[in-house]
Length: 115
Ligand code: FES
Image (cartoon, rainbow, N blue to C red; front, side, top):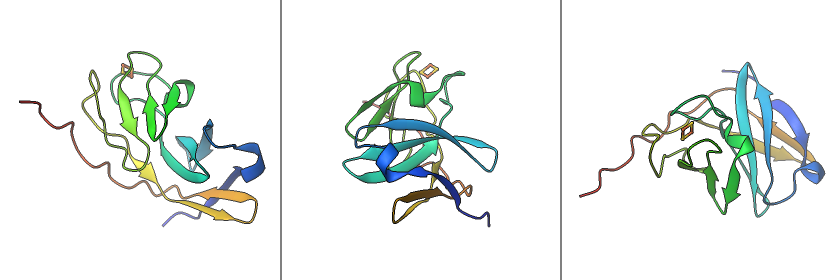
């Protein structure tokens, strides 16, 4: 089990913000949704693109390259062209410090098939 890594201060990560941080060799997109923090793999599962450079729509990160959407709480992919979800990372807030664990949790699966 990897140790949690301090990645920033709450005061520097306002609601609606997305920040790229490095945790144990992983590039992670750290998101503040209405004061709650979530962390997912920063690299899109479609091609090379940094999700932290895309937009945040509520609880959804939008890839800046081709627009795939990922849910920040589950890592689940919500739209094409990506079909694989991104891993999520545990986040802890202690006082003004935000900590992220390098122990990625498996993404929650493939995009559901539309009928
Ligand atoms: S690189 Fe993210 S959708 Fe294509």
